[in-house]
Image 1 (cartoon, rainbow, N blue to C red):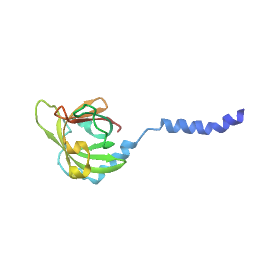
Image 2: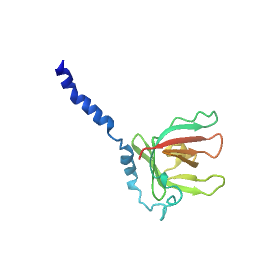
Image 3: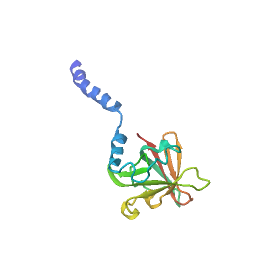
Image 4: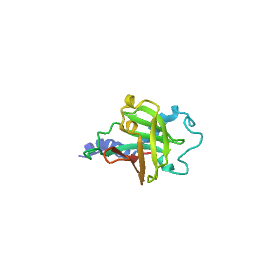
Amino acid sequence: MKYPIKSMLPIILATIFFACKKDNTGGQLIKLLDTVPARQYYYDDIFKNISPEIYGTWKVIGTSGGFAGNGYPPDFDYLLVKPNAVFGIVRNNSLLTTGKLEIVERPPYDLLVHFVSDTPPNEVNVEIISDYEKFLVFQSDTLSLYSTCCDRFDTHLKKVD
């Protein structure tokens, strides 16, 4: 009886080790934006004093809204954002497009942005690029991209890095 337990010990220890290992997906994915120069769109960072919490890797966790209110099937996996308002859209670990975020001053929205893609929207086929105007709401480690109208889609993301 002692032998089977001893032979299973390495498997148990390996399982514990890998289960406790931190997921570094976000850290690896943000490197995909290294191909975009820091000052590609802006000389100074437009979010530095407004919402620096936007920086990082955001995983899509759900959608809502639309005519029926059911949302849409997620069409990308991660939103990457780095200083100077550079963003990237990732699907299946591939960078679909890059672009810039533009802040739009329009009351009553605290933080309204446009996702301006370097690739035409019809080539990217991602909802937040086609319907590019969203207002941002941060709640702890969650970011919601809300549309400005009732029958358009919203996307909800969780920060992973």
